[in-house]
Image 1 (spheres, rainbow, N blue to C red):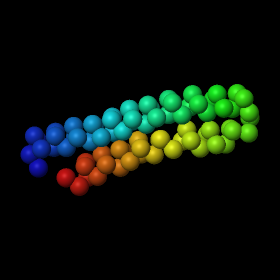
Image 2: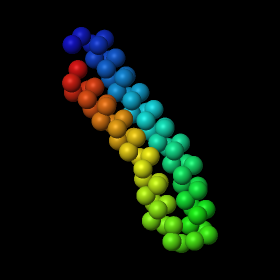
Image 3: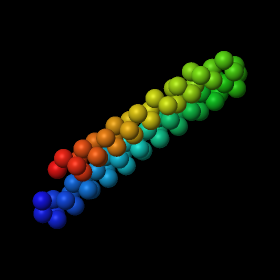
Image 4: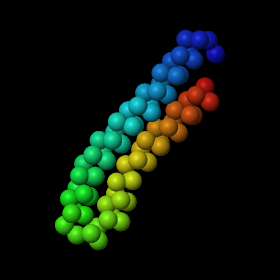
Length: 74
């Protein structure tokens, strides 16, 4: 693999991780605010709020997996 192609693969991996992290953060922002508001009214929503806050984080993990595939397959 020539250096130009290796650089493009690295840039693609960085974009995959960066954009998926930004998307996960934006999702967690809205869900986290709603979960805190629900828990302020009734403490029984703690488990559901925690679960709903964790779900968008899987998007960042998928971005990391795509980046690792890009780095080690190409």
